[in-house]
Image 1 (cartoon, rainbow, N blue to C red):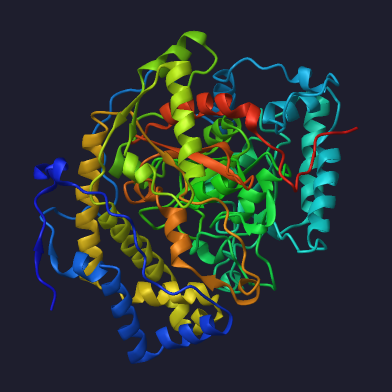
Image 2 (cartoon, rainbow, N blue to C red):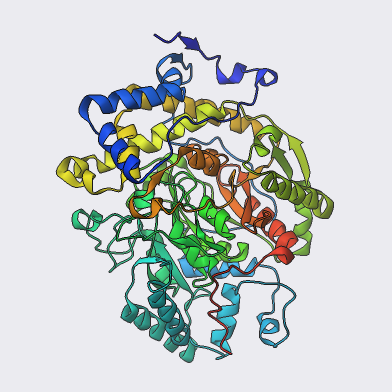
Length: 610
């Protein structure tokens, strides 16, 4: 029997007694035959529960959830105290049309002359084409959406013949893309474009509805039990802005993994555009790879455990996780959870802002329960507002910040903080974040229990055995959680929310590396049947949990590369509803790091018509 442990109330915790504990995950790394054997064992009626019980004890989950008295009341979804207004912002009415919000966001962007990029002069370093570049090219009749569509269709069709195959989309209809592009081309010919996003090509992650495509969640069977009758709310908002939707992007099956490995349909794991032998990160693997390769300006992903930020970081692009409830989840496979959001992935911060402007808007239920303040955009068009960066206080928990697989990551991120101080006067303040292990435990129980609840009817109906092996291991773990485990996790959620709200009284943004390691190699033995590697998962998820368990906004920005040339991301975690502040800071970070950006090994110059 474990000895009972009693936690002091969160408000009485003495931070001077908090010691940083390195995360140690005790679980086997398995591929191939051993992976299959392990799945048979954990799914066996008695043996399975014994194995899961042993693993949970080894990882101190039983001690935390069952042998500990937690004095706080449960918090079953994020609850935020009232927040001060953000400085230097433009407030937007979320009831306005998506195309009007996108145009308002456009006015908030800094001055930019797209014509300079078409002058024929060679640019000093690699850069991605921005949404404003596409809009200029269309308006100036340098190219049409239909011409761009043909180029994209050609690339997508060729991807399946690459060696190794680079499957970016799960569902794709060339004629549907041509039809959308032709409509956009006509609008430009008539001078009736719908918004700055008209004619912009985007991919949608396979767990978000995009009619008429099925939503499989990258399984082999989800479309058989869940029909798609219309677009998800976020997708509908993009379509009303004139966005051309290219199809459903690949992902880690049901979002239940951090690498992007997916053996469904035969060797269908998405490859990292910077190094094809490496993972993209997950679970939004396809969306991040599509953006990083230059194929689409932006994509929509979902983020329940870093699933937008991890692949964005590993692929060297920008990924925004909004505050919980800021965007509607209606029309996604994971629409009933308390840790998940739909968020944009794009190659630049300004493109993330434009897409975010189009998709934002809380669901009716969340407006009642969360009472979100009006959304804001950072006013990047005014030079005076650039000075407000100097007043930002950045919180850094040094021992946590440095707990990475390679010091390349912490060194590059540290250099950016020094640049922010030197260029903008941002002050970095040392903070302590207590109970990180408790936060990780509460998150896995929360997302696991919610996933299990939503999938249980289908698993009981015989679909569970059709899941990939690593998903089945996750489901075995989730089935082992009890009702009391779930309630204990929600009590921990309230504690950890208290700790973070206290930190945000001292700082404006918490800064960390986005991931604890750069893109891991894909073991050849993992391609056919997948793999389970919780050590890699721990490194990839090290810094991202607060965004999900507590519903805080967070963004990853590419800031450099490790010695192997693999991208490194810096994460900025904001106060509740503080998207404008982290977007403003992210824009400054991007500008400081722009010259170091490198072209991915696999890159398509879609807009270049030469």
